Image (cartoon, rainbow over all chains, first blue to last red; front, side, top):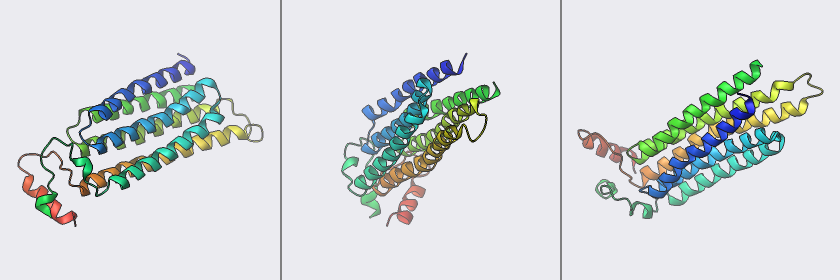
Length: 105
Length: 125
């Protein structure tokens, strides 16, 4: 098996590993679960861009795309975490037990 | 030859850890354990895969004066992997902190709810 076949195998496998994260985005009980799954997909996409560059033998171009994607992914997830912080609206669709802050406060 | 084998081994071992992250994200019971699986699996496996492709760039390396562009691309790829290695745990920690301060309750053993309430009193202000 040459290294090009190995890269294609890695890229297809990464694409299939995105399916559980996509399923978690669909069923995830709270909004934070969905944001974690989006973050996982973004990290996988940055790796996948490097793999695509290696397959097309243009790594020097795709590596900049991957760097920009990783930066945007980090900024986006931090912004989502700060936005949902202390709003408590995203807990309402959580169909488990009651959130315990009412007793603790 | 040895560079090709080494990079293929690194890429395939990175895929193994990606399997761990995906299975943990779909199988674990509550938000905190899922975040744990996502952060750990992603950081190590991205590091291994990108390190494998960065080492593969060195296959035609002869001298620094001719192939400095290869070294530059390799340094950028190592920078991406270092960046993901730093920021993936940071972002998952930020999301977990937002969930904790909003009162999202972890799934715990039935004998431990009292300890959990003590932790809430201690850490939420």
